[in-house]
Length: 416
Image (cartoon, rainbow, N blue to C red; front, side, top):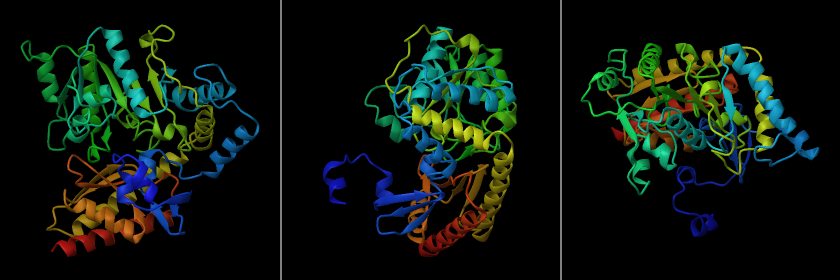
């Protein structure tokens, strides 16, 4: 372990919660060098919807590499790129009535967000972007400007401009985004007409805050009324995490721009996509570029994931059913501790248990000691966040929920 302390930057974070050297991973489990195993309800922060070393995706990847498939090609045409575009069109876009163009902006989610912001400003000629309280869109400067988390914002080192925060949906409020509506309607509100509104339907990093379908529909209508582009950030909660492939499907919303990353690569390999409404695809060649726009092994595993899991609705139904199971289990934990101020929320297989700013870290640590990996989220790290693989077995899901329940009980007892 010494080399990590001696040579790696202190900015690392997850290794501080789990100070072990992981050596192997399969399905929903991670194993340390000494052989100890953990159930993984972290799943690469949502990058491993199909689990670790999924055998179907692994076979496709190994075959491609063993046959000397192209690894790096920027935006040159390759067979792997064609297969991904054809499969995405056949399996995802056309069945949902989407005619969006596909842009490869770079390897990570922040690349997709940056491209979406730049394109929205280019198309509209406007500079302001509206975002929501408790949002998180990435750690690059443009993405930080539309992020609410103060810890991340402070890391920028420069003023973050061109963005206006408004309140996110809350269950006790009117379904229409009234504050934004008043700003747009008021001639002296001080808000210049925005180029875009960027939204997460579930704010996973923000504390698993779930927007209601009627609120999302009202937001989309408000954008249409004022000629504002709607950007959906589906980086963490897309690719089936909420049940449907896109998290906004259940609301019947069609965003102008959609940011995808994390599990779009299937195997955990770096890949991001920006889906662009065709009339917005206005950039000339090379106007947005990057060296790693063509990680072809990620194209291969992304294609295989779509073929294996999205040609029918089996995974979607299983995710919704398991999501109901998780939600019920968390509500049982809340009821078991009526005086502790706990609350639960989520959709599909992204759920949060709010236990308090001081206690969430203790619950996560206790869960790790008992063999379960979970992270915390929210502006004060007050929420224990659950992101198990969508392909998790019922037995593993039941075991993980039992560990979580016991961890909460132990921590609350210690806290008195």
